[in-house]
Amino acid sequence: MSAIKPVRGTHDLIGEDQRRHAHVVATARRVTALYGFEEWATPIFEETGVFARSLGDTSDVVSKEMYTFTDRGGDSLTLRPEGTAAVCRALVTNGLTQSLPQKVFYTGPMFRYERPQKGRYRQFHQIGAELIGPGEPLADAEAIRMGHDVLAALGIAENVLLELNTLGDVESRAAWRAALVEYFSAFRDRLSEDSQNRLERNPLRILDSKAPEDRALLADAPVLASYLNDASRQFWDELRNALTLFGVAFTENPNIVRGLDYYSHTAFEFVTTQLGTQGTVLAGGRYDGLVAEMGGPKTPAIGWAGGIERLAMLLEAAPAVTRPVAIIPLGDAAQAVAIKALNTLRSADIRAEMAYRGNLKKRMERANRTGASHVVIIGENEVAKGVVQLRDLSSGEQVELPEVALVETLKAAGAGRQA
Image 1 (cartoon, helix red, strand yellow):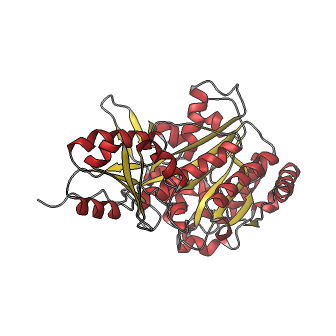
Image 2 (image 1 turned 60 degrees about the vertical axis):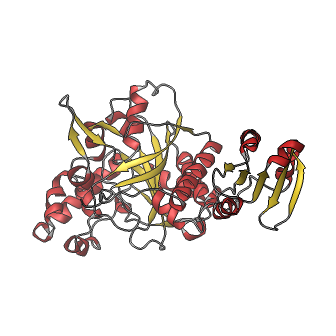
Image 3 (image 1 turned 180 degrees about the vertical axis):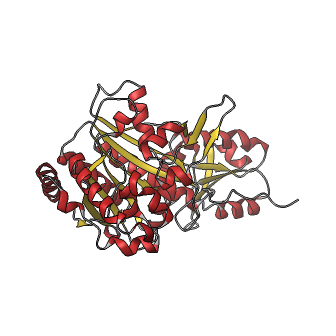
């Protein structure tokens, strides 16, 4: 029988990988809480319409990458490919559109059927934040600053660059869209098959194309800046001024686009050159029409999401592990005292482990392998006297002390702290 392997595009989180992953989540949870965000958790699958209507049926995610299935009741369900649509669905179905603003942090697995490569999986994980309600440029700047603060708290902000663009309002985008259709129609025969299909339905998606024949036409394509109306220009100016006030440096990149009509104004990406072609680590934008797509009222919103796998790869080092204290009972009479010591240490937030079997030498060897900082040795003599032997494995020093003084002595020695 052949060995069972993980499904292609999935990976186990064990040891250092899990510590890195957990550190990214804990850091983002802590930073977003400073901004007043509360954590939501939505199901990992939704009715297919939640994502089909929010991502657009001409997008690669919907047409090629979603994990969609029919359940036993005949309903079409989809494993969530991203988090924003699910949050907006939850906002509407839980009756929260009249209780704005809502500041939402989320984390969890997402699913897309795409070619696995470094930093990209078919089951991947994200952190995300959605600020629902405010429609001002200042809200966008604050959300972007919050994303920057998450990266800074992870120690990777200096290796990441913020790229920023405006998508304009509905009126500006409509004029730009018409110009794009006219331009690309003149080169229809030179477009890739996918882009030919997108030309009438969603021409902005052509700007995202990776096909060489499409890329060759982009240099001379109409740019949105030429079609911004006064309101869009004012929003763009106020956003850049607000980011300056928040102390966030940025580079303007007109090639950052979002292909769906409910996106407007702000689009941004935090990018790095340290992960090869998978350079975007946190990205987002304003989506003032998505809540309405879910059946709610027209509601402004700004949000972002970051790939945990990519962020974890950028960490300089894995978070340290708290070194345990090993308890070694010698003889039956010592078992009860050892168990009491275990409970006492753990109640004091000191990681403690019992060495169950083997002679003293073997148990000491195991304690060293676990990275223990100290060993507590309890034999029959120690039980009779109400004491324990405490050995510092870094210095080799061993002292006898009363059982009741164990926690205080270990705390003073730094036990329970990360290595």
